[in-house]
Length: 400
Ligand SMILES: [Zn+2]
Image 1 (spheres, rainbow, N blue to C red):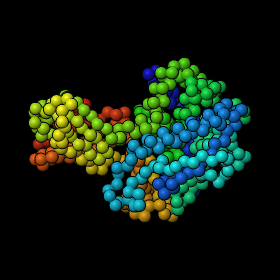
Image 2 (spheres, rainbow, N blue to C red):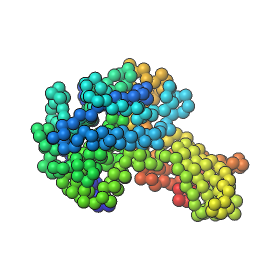
Image 3 (cartoon, rainbow, N blue to C red):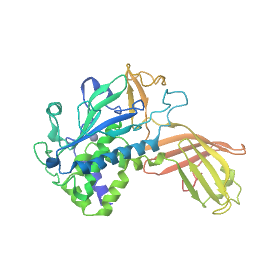
Image 4 (cartoon, protein in one colour):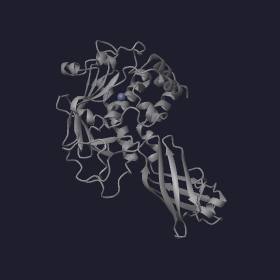
């Protein structure tokens, strides 16, 4: 798709203002932390808009904000966190994000933990956010409670006219409404990503996650070039939104079933211990294991032949990091990860560009137990190799 190449090229050009993700000062150490963790069951939020300057009525913004929150909630629910052994992290057992119930309030008051401001900034916020004209969008954390590790702040999207209009020569004058408001939805997904702890540069170099969370994504998506091209093609718009939908960005971490009748006979008999008359396979892939079934023919009864089990994800590049304040009362037990950074660091949700997993395949009859290594990439590509009698065999699961 042309737009993909075009976006990649635009995002790679020289840096400019971009977006900011959080406040500074003593909070900077925790600037990358998610705004809310699982100890916070609900978050009240409000929506404020300068309809004249922003160009979109409040009634149209309500479902777009809800969609954005739902999109990340679905993504994190599917991604999970396979980092911890049982009992290592209490009381939650894992770092789960976007678990909150988000409750829309009628009016915007400054005590709300989350405010969406479309084309509006209070006097106080303007002082805090002095160079507002440099931004198309921003997620600004104004308070962080070190005990509960919860935040207060606002998401700001700039208006297309008036004194807060961004200083961006290429800004499309109808950027927030053209093409079914695709740019508004995407920029909001970007800013919400920050609220859930995803920083710029997440996801590696070349996938949709790294593109959506690129520092320059908001300003690139609202340019005349992008907006005119996407608005002219409903198919391109659907593709653009679909590929960057947060749940898609986490796709390789979801449970799925792969079926096929393309067994490689030596692999089947030798590595998996499945008799040669079974021509079809079904592999049910979960986060930490995969169950291998085989059928004699398509539609025939599936018999369970073995299970692949994964140990920890072997990686150092998580998508979300948590820095743990000494004052925190959220986690009562956590692994000692060392104090190299002078404060506790917890590794959270995983969705990096590549994950390498080690594990083993054990046949149901117990006769086979072999080491297995898999690599996953967020674009959905994966390879699984088995080490058998000292040799790599990369045809373990054709088509998987
Ligand atoms: Zn950003």
